[in-house]
Length: 469
Image (tube, rainbow, N blue to C red):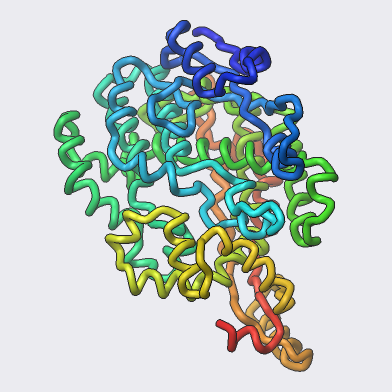
């Protein structure tokens, strides 16, 4: 195993050379193989923010540590995935990844709340894409399979499944899927896409059975368990990296932000503490083994850190009430776009095209104006959110709203919580055991985080908001 400290390398990067070219040259001079570990530093959000706040000035480059497998891939916008020589062509040829470059990983989630109108860019905070997520998931899968001694053929199957597992993501992501859950179900759409051009010829060329790849995407069988795990590893790694960047923004950059955005920045504290204290946490990918019993981890402590990080990401981002407020505004417009464009068009569109369609519906020229438009509406209609425990409390609260002269505009029920994944397996001398058995105290703490999101969220506004919708 070789270690390429690309963070140290980037510190010596000439200012007139792009990061991609610089790292690409390193990759050419130092062949990277599956199983190597690479410490990557990405351009920090702080530098991007300062560049926007102070145009014309060029502060010294600032980089933030991110640990993960790396190789420079042609035509890729996200260059920290690793692959062996055997599978490099698979990464390069897999259909559907080009479109995923234009589908944001977190889609509508959080972006309109976190990108203030004066910075004029709704992609500022969470720029990472489904392509980057898919590449990293495939890299994790390949690493896990290779170090577990699995065959080339089995490894190739799960790598391709990881690359293709998000190709059926429609523009708008989860927000769009909410308007027609059955018609826009990703597993159903994946079956359609895997059995036609351009994916079917690709699978035939690689001598892969589309039904077998689809089964893995549906998390069936042992390889399906591998994909399910690397999917969670990848999105947690990428999302927590960008989320912690938000927390580290300097006061100058956030001084004029609305109060709800400052509140959201503060919510990144728990995830940031984990990321900062264990910056190389995801190196534990090399401690996973694929066995007949399933996938197990040899480092119970690192697995506990990951599960805790994933839990606070659900509490403070994925299931946060403010993070979903854009869906309240955009749901009727997403529904209108879906009815007008249809499923096939949504499988071709990217997020920018979706915003452009929404802009037409609200009388704007460009999708770039949607974020400041929603920021304005938040203030104009005085939108607030309250979280309650039971349906009875919700009914009482709605009566209170009526007496206050306000109207409920949307309701989200998250009382089911989320899967804590504390049943993941830990490798022991006797075999394997669930994490919650091996580390009961940490598992209990994680379950307490799960309980904290089990609420009903009621969004309410001034009475004329409904007439606006």
